[in-house]
Image 1 (cartoon, rainbow, N blue to C red):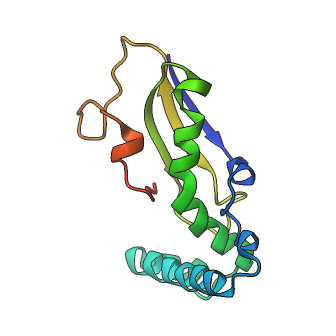
Image 2 (cartoon, rainbow, N blue to C red):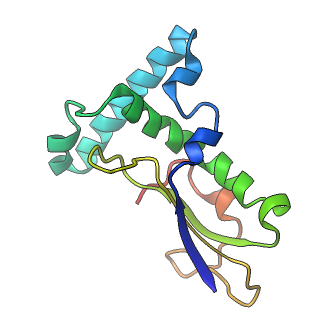
Length: 143
């Protein structure tokens, strides 16, 4: 059996996924806001039609900055969630975040695939066996 799931509320368990976690550190807050604007601008360059939804941001600063911070920290939470102590002998296929979407109900949704069956060999998009997707995957994969 291959399991498919998603987690919407994982960010409440991870310190640093909300800009309010940096209260009192104005330099960090400024950097997060600046990086969030750069994220929206980069997304607009990659998908020009997205400019209608992304620039200027039609969302709250909490949501925009929260998505940026979640992209930076989701790999740590996924590693914890699938750790030997919690999940046992598990083979992880994919753990990825969606592209920022201000119309989404929850822009921080994390999609995952995994199996406990040792006879199933999960593969990457090129058909190669996944050695350790949590270590080799980029920090900010998006679909």
